Image (cartoon, rainbow, N blue to C red; front, side, top):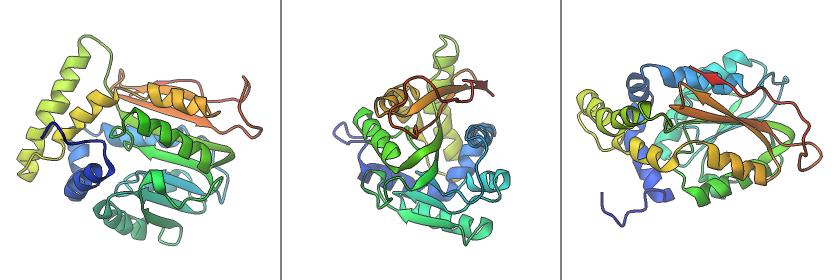
Length: 258
């Protein structure tokens, strides 16, 4: 990879996920030993109870890997919009939508930073494994978008593969992401130019700590979650109904999940 390539640019990320889209969920499941599915479920659970008919948004939705679990847990949600920059991911998401809830799921092939989503239009926002490709300036912009799109009182939950802090686990985990995952990809798919980037992005992203600070700076209440000793991290919170929160407002307790 050339040193002058901006791996955080929209064009690079779009091309990368267009390439890996057809096997993204399958390879992720194998390479994570099934943990990605567990973490998606925990991200959905963190939203708490959703009222019937609510409108939701899945940012960086990929192929809609989260929707089956979401609809199973909340069968009476209203409209769900999936947004992704990759045309190949959106094509896969369309197939998933037809299988799960064709009349309730809408799709947008758009950049999250230049989307057509109306202000204060979402009762909840969900994102699973969609933020690690963002640099700090993009995380600030994402925070502004979440604050803009959520209705007052609306909730959000996101989860991302992260860099654990432990002196023993961290080097092993990062070696696995950067060294072993490309080998798994090559064995199963015959190439290794997509998933090799996951370790690079995770090393740059770290965990959800920076995003938490940006969300809080925009007046959102936010708490962190940690999963499997920090191999994934998440954020759950809400947009206060009366503006910037100063104390109050109940959130689920911070948790460490596996």
